[in-house]
Amino acid sequence: MFSLSWERKRHVLLIRFSDVLTSRDMAETDLAIVEFVAEHGRGDTIYDFTATTAVAIPQTGFVARRYQPPLSPGSARIIVAPRDDLRHESLEFAEQQAELGFLRPHVTRTLEEAFGILRLGARPVFELLLAPALRA
Image 1 (spheres, rainbow, N blue to C red):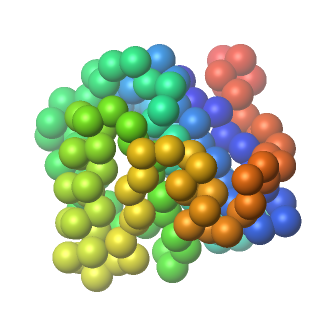
Image 2 (tube, rainbow, N blue to C red; image 1 turned 30 degrees about the horizontal axis):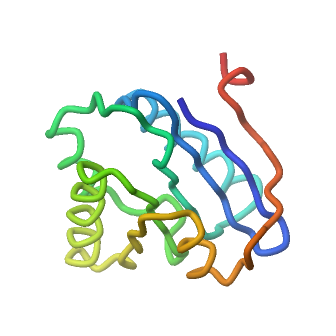
């Protein structure tokens, strides 16, 4: 599952994943980002995997994502991955994106680090746009 929030002042999208991370979550997230960018324009994105409990994505799914162009080109992407398995995949993703000529995503262990990279301050205000209950 995932939720989508927006920090209007700095135009930052926060995607928080929870429970078991699936290929469907990733596909639905991509669609939500495309819709968001079409309506609000490009912005920086934080992908927060802190609340994931397990990963149910085949390795081929992770590898394929490494070659996809950014959904908000030219904007910062920050991946918050405290779990070692997701951190490893995130670092591989960031490396491949850079090799393809895309802006390299940052990979952090905490949401606070992500806020710091974007200079959002300690307590940015995010407005909930899409939550699991709203997607059903």
